[in-house]
Image 1 (tube, rainbow, N blue to C red):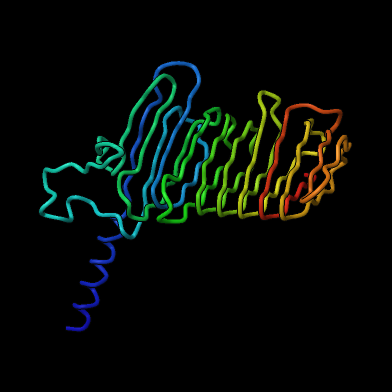
Image 2 (image 1 turned 30 degrees about the vertical axis):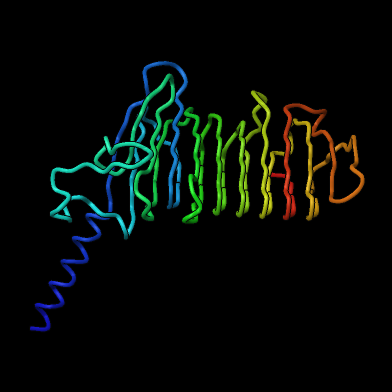
Length: 258
């Protein structure tokens, strides 16, 4: 009897884990530039690259409710103020110009594992304050925009340009190169900014920390020092280049040499 009960419990757990994972594949609009936009309510986002032109989204979460698990939801579609589930995985999908957009409709905690082409650009946003969304981005070659409320932002092997706003988390970025295509900015309200550049990177730096300090092992040619409250320095890397604006309200800024 006990053995049968254990097997039943294991089967239930196995079935639950199967239903807790959903995968969705989408194509970018026809055109040149590939831009993925994703807005979430609650859950972590990881973006990596693959050698296909499609976007693959895998959704995981202990609280994920597949409609097939609720008899009352049979034949019904999830709707919210953000849109209608036209993907069958709890996302609203839309296309406009070169942008492929997704919005999480559920307020439940769901983690997103996303694969995009290496030359794609990504725009990621945490819509509300009900959870804590961490953003992990690796190898993306296009432009990156992140709007984070309560989570950390971690980027590895990227070139930029990047625009990051983080309210209550740290921002850690490791550049494989520093693109000269457009200006970059990182703004953290209640967290640290930790950036690693290749030694040969070119840029015009604006560094600001209201209630923190500035640290570096880079050879920065300082062109202007701020006065008054906080730490403020302008300078150039390797003769100057693209504008790089780093601003922290209540955290330190660390600039490292790769």
